[in-house]
Image 1 (cartoon, rainbow, N blue to C red):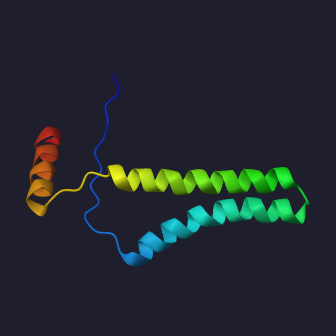
Image 2: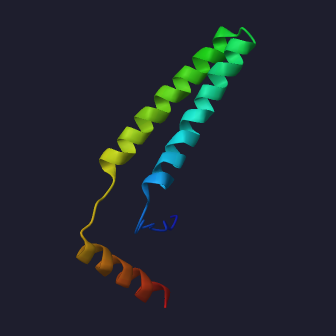
Length: 85
């Protein structure tokens, strides 16, 4: 049985969010662009499919993301600290 480590993001700025999203888009745009440059329709399709999967994965992760109130997050952080102390 593997032990999972919980990660709680306390604060994320708009710029950090945009940078994360831009890096995802840049990856599949690069594949499509290289496919166009090399005249490879297969590489263009791979880039498009990876882009589609990235968008679907991001949407699924956002839908499943567990959101907490401040009190719930504080309680969870206290539980984590007690477990590590």
